[in-house]
Image 1 (cartoon, rainbow, N blue to C red):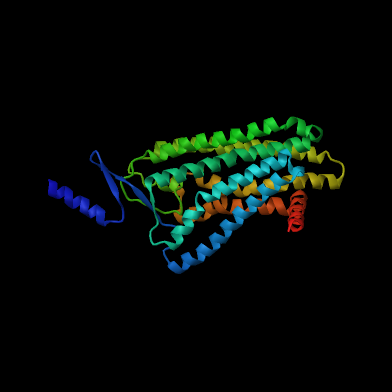
Image 2 (image 1 turned 30 degrees about the horizontal axis):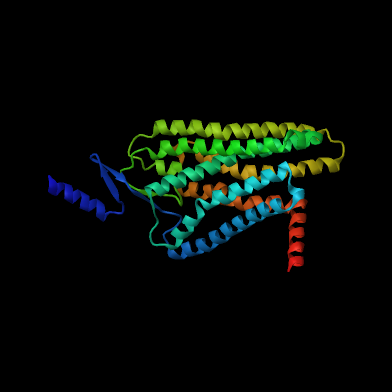
Amino acid sequence: MCQVKHRIMDSLTASTMRMIPVQNQSWVSEFILLGFSSDPTTNSILFIVFLLIYLSSVLGNGLIIMLVCLDTQLHTPMYFFLCVLSLLDMSYVTTTMPQMLVHLLAHSQTISFAGCWLQMYMFGALALTECTFFVVMAYDRYVAICYPLHYTVILNWGLCIRLASGTWICGFFSSLLHTFFTMSLPYCGPNRVNHYFCEGPSVRTLACMDTHLIEVVDLVLSVFVVVTPISLIVASYIRIAKAILKIKSTQGRCKAFSTCASHLTVVTFFYAPASYIYMRPNSSSSPERDKMISLFYNVFTALLNPVVYSLRNKDIKRAFLKVMSLGRVGL
């Protein structure tokens, strides 16, 4: 009996996965992230591309945070929320891209079970926070256009801080449920995740039990944190559209619409692919396609935000030129 046990353990050790024997059941202690390609040349090219995207995302969002903090004229609810969004995007993209960049060049693409748990939780927490935070930004545009004379009275600093804090609390709590349900499943092999980071649906397919109930719970959670914010955003913009149509001058209408166009662009790029990934049955999933689609809400949105909000925003441009001129004077 002991010899058979030793032979089984030796064969498992020789395979690509490492497991921990617990109560007559083997549990995966690490996962292998397959990434995009096994070709070294392709991975080198992808490394350069994603490194430039990551640095641009961090520097762009960091620049917005710095400008909002330094320029007192940007100390308004709208730019406070933009600053929080930039902080979310910087944190969001940092949970996945540094590790992805390392795996593109390294021979080993492993991640420990605890590391996978932590990455899944932080990614989900920041993503869900951003989901609900887009509602706050839509409400900000609603108040600014529908009640312009009472804008700073309604959106006082106390309410702004409570709204921002509430989204973070909601996001981190919801992610805890999602991560707990996924990572509490038994994983006894295989351990090869066909993705570039530990995303819930991709990891859950490796569970060695029926995950139908967990998928139903996850779908209900996704409906709550995705469909509900989308509904609130749509309701806000219906009211905004009605208010804009009441503006008599064409110039006034264009100005009012331009303040919403940036937010709508970012919301579309974030919600459309995220809804596709998280709100459909696993039976219709395609790992290769899912990896490509996840890049939109994981990577490209963080890059898009500073581009959209800075290029279309005169206040950001003015603050940037002001900071640059002060820097030259200081030199």
